[in-house]
Amino acid sequence: MLALPAITAALAQVPAASTAPSYSAASIVNAATQATGILAPNSIATIYGTNLSWTTHAVDFADLRGGTLPIALEGVSVNVNGILGSLFFVSPGQINFLIPYDLTVTSATVYVERQGIAGPQVIIPLANTAPGFFQWNGNFALAEHADGSLISSAAPALANEIIVLYAAGLGRTSPDVPSGHIVSTATSILYASELQILLNGQPCASSSIYYAGLTPGFAGLYQINLILPDVLAPDPVIQIVIGPQSSPSSIQLFAQ
Image (cartoon, rainbow, N blue to C red; front, side, top):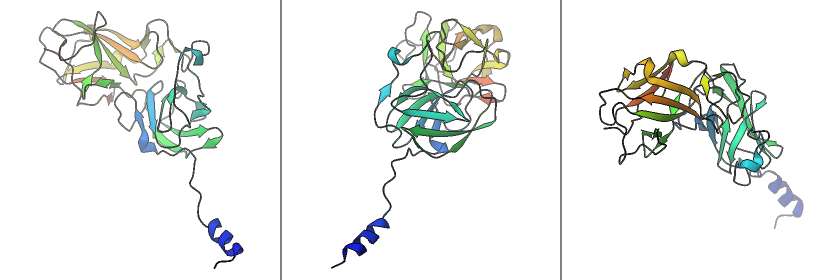
């Protein structure tokens, strides 16, 4: 039989299970596309991991301060290059947050802190923009008809119709907005002159983009108001291009 000192010594060598937040750079994705890689200021991003929070909490009106998203929920915060990101949602396995608007660097150090316990510091790449459509029903872009009804297989977009597309990662705006602020009016993107919408690889006329900017009533959510061309292929591939950055080429628009 082992003596008590020997048992104590043996147990001391068994590492305790870590309760610190756990994630990696590869588990931080664009919330719209769910793709890893480059993010942009004012992008909605998602961190997947474990021990990120002890509870689940989605932002509601009571969490807002002066029309701005909170930078802490349930004792959880996300530090991005020394700036706390605004939070939409925390849970043990997922955090949805906003890349701070103020960042102008090409990479950023990110870490999650939960009630004083910090996770690993990881580095993510940044660019001026990192466009991507929000998606639903597999690989189809989230879009609405002008009356606010959803564009779907049962109610597809039509040629010459004005539609509203929802996206993330379109970058800074003119005028600037405070990070995490819920805008109340139309606020156009700074890089509008570089914006193109491609349908099956062909750019729509620049005059067909009526608006590209933040969606009133939200933070970090962008919309593009677009009039579709006279001739429209069924369910075309649709892409956002801003300068050297483009959204995934696998996304389609319900259309006929």
